[in-house]
Image (cartoon, rainbow, N blue to C red; front, side, top):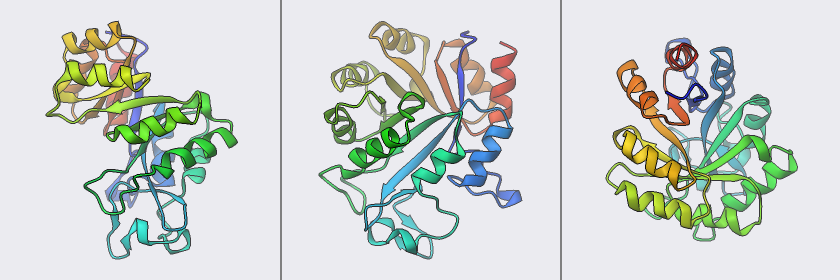
Length: 234
């Protein structure tokens, strides 16, 4: 097991019982308090070019994000700049949400370019990974010439070998595998291809033990405290 395995908090560390929602500044603060090395968050483009931190394309009771201006976002939905400030000192895995099958798909992938401009402007390039299921977003990042690392998110039904090859072709630094694909053989193949391996989403201690034994580089987890203990005791 790799003792250097990083712990990333999936959408921060929400705690519904305490009123802490996912992808919020409070969730990111809780992730830090629990000992996370980093956070994973989601970004979507608003109607006026803002970078809203929210997982789903539609905000319940408000509307589709691509139809909303930044001033119309609910108070609990931060902009990316606010999230980066809240996560100073931690790695931030920014998942760009832009997919042809979702509302508001942008074939120009402006969100990718805007994320890079913001990250570079805030001098956070060394502490950010940009990830996406959509290869177009990752290609858009590379086309900026930025040094920001990218990671290809892999759908569970995809072939691991093909996904590793695709990540290499896209110039990625990492491949982000679902827990079902993060077996030792696949992790070893990714490492041999020069890719780091992040695994999502680790929700229980049995799964955590299995992926740590496979020598993954990062666990993206819903239970930061358990992951922190397991890695530190490794």
